Image (tube, one colour):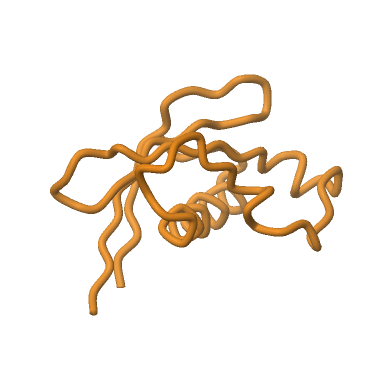
Length: 91
């Protein structure tokens, strides 16, 4: 089964980014926040559960969907040292 998710940056407060996300061709009704600089700098342990790294702000999407989007954001951040404005996860 194919998975298609889109995401877009809502805002950045300090080092914390808030993202809206959802299934392709549907409303981006999920919302989560993440703090990648703290994770990359070691302020947050790599042993921290993913649900404490990718913090859902509503229950309109699953944690698993948010985690997939997070993987794309994380890879982009490592390559560019900034949060992406928008993107997608497709398998």
